[in-house]
Image 1 (cartoon, rainbow, N blue to C red):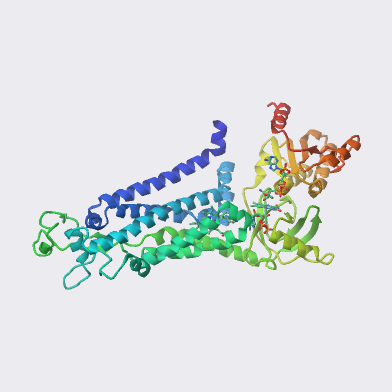
Image 2 (cartoon, rainbow, N blue to C red; image 1 turned 90 degrees about the vertical axis):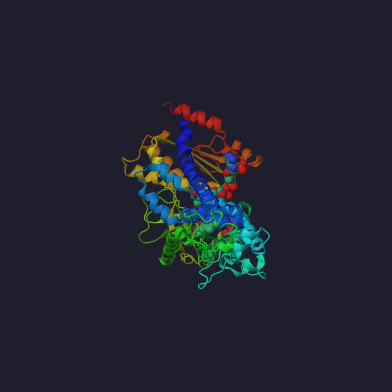
Length: 523
Ligand SMILES: Cc1cc2nc3c(=O)[nH]c(=O)nc-3n(C[C@H](O)[C@H](O)[C@H](O)COP(=O)(O)OP(=O)(O)OC[C@H]3O[C@@H](n4cnc5c(N)ncnc54)[C@H](O)[C@@H]3O)c2cc1C
Ligand SMILES: NC(=O)C1=CN([C@@H]2O[C@H](COP(=O)(O)OP(=O)(O)OC[C@H]3O[C@@H](n4cnc5c(N)ncnc54)[C@H](OP(=O)(O)O)[C@@H]3O)[C@@H](O)[C@H]2O)C=CC1
Ligand code: HEM
């Protein structure tokens, strides 16, 4: 339980608070519209469809305020940097930004559905009230119109028999913006499904930019002030003189003509702040796009991996962080994330890019055709982002597990450890590292074999053989690999990696590995 609290306690707390606010807003505004005296006559026309439309609107305001914040990467980095006081738990929490973004988005989708259905019913109920289908009072209330001479104001926005619900929806600000917002949302959410994002990231990415339409529609959605409330409810109008005798309205003092007005649109107040923050985010990205980035070194590694060593003035990183790269020669709009494999101690930063799809393939092809020593294509760098994995250095024993190119964060950590070794950095509390790297192809190990070789030599020379235990697993092996290994089993170094520690075949037996680590580190 204590582990669960350490690992998930803060996330659970944030979820409970977020859900609590949603529930509070829904219940509070449902009761406000369901029981408020100022909506007594509005409810005569709309019944419970009124609170069912307005309560979700309040929850939508809250979540539309939140939805942009988790994707303001630079804001998160600023917060992450300032959370030194709250330490790793809060900083790690910020890494769950996209999970929270999706959660808020699903709440928006749910509330949009309820809000839309309720408002479509409202339009129907307004029409029926105007046509007298709900009895004299709704009909009389619907006959009220804005008139200075008669000192009346309207309650029912449908004020003619020729106005059908469909016509109403497409000729009012609320209806039109509502349709636009809902369509944008449906397209964004459907294109955001994992299966689309995995296979057609660009479809997701470009469709996602409908969020601009979504927010533009949202800001104006309430401008029509369609839902109206009674302005004076004391004395209450629903006394025997008034309620069913509109002929008395305005003729006897106990029964003034009921006055109505629409509510002040609020959504823009909820979303304007996050919209400005997000705008700054994109502005900062553009400024970074304009900053010069030069190539220090370009290395084509085996297994279609490209190592880029880049230099950007003023760039600072921490181990395990990632950057977004944009190569205008491939696409002006696409930014792709890559984890940095250099150490903060180096005067450049590097990434190892594995060719997996169109963008990475095009980049590697462009670089492969460069003349010797030629500069690569213009590259823009945004970042660094992500929680630094520097916490690794706070633990006496650390287990690092990388799979395929997912090893890149650990390359940065291992390199940084080497520098800390060289400088006998007192901050380095780590006295044991277990590094596991699983790859499908033998060549992949070449990406960082030289780094492991240097570390192996360095730790030996310092009499710290036990400092680094690394285990490389070749999971895409066949009999030829095993035969080859058997023939050379007596060699000092491994036939695949040239390292002292022999490569393992297949996937690790984690129970055994954890047991071994536990036994070797009893304290
Ligand atoms: C935090 C992070 C760190 C990463 N670090 C590395 C690394 O060090 N080395 C490395 O080789 N790869 C890394 N990747 C993966 C790398 O971003 C993708 O391989 C690359 O974006 C694929 O682009 P593509 O157009 O060539 O492939 P596609 O065929 O378009 O996509 C292949 C996969 O990458 C995802 N993807 C595509 N474009 C993007 C994008 N703009 N943003 C996020 N995901 C995208 C797709 O969802 C799909 O799952 C990292 C990804 C993340 C999220
Ligand atoms: N978070 C980060 O900082 C980064 C993340 N990445 C991500 O890392 C991933 C690596 O991709 P790629 O290079 O193509 O990897 P590969 O698919 O080439 O290799 C994955 C390796 O992991 C093994 N593996 C997969 N699942 C398990 C499991 N459940 N238990 C044990 N071993 C497992 C595979 O073994 P088998 O052959 O038996 O399937 C294989 O050896 C990408 O999705 C990339 O986005 C990349 C860089 C940085
Ligand atoms: C109301 C609905 C939504 C809005 C307004 C919205 C808005 C945004 C915005 C503005 C970004 C930032 C783009 C950038 O600057 O990098 C973003 C990113 C993202 N959104 Fe949404 N989104 C919504 C719904 C969703 C849903 C339903 C999902 C997934 C289920 C999703 C997944 C993502 C992901 C994965 C990213 C990060 C893309 C990247 O940086 O690689 N979003 N969203």
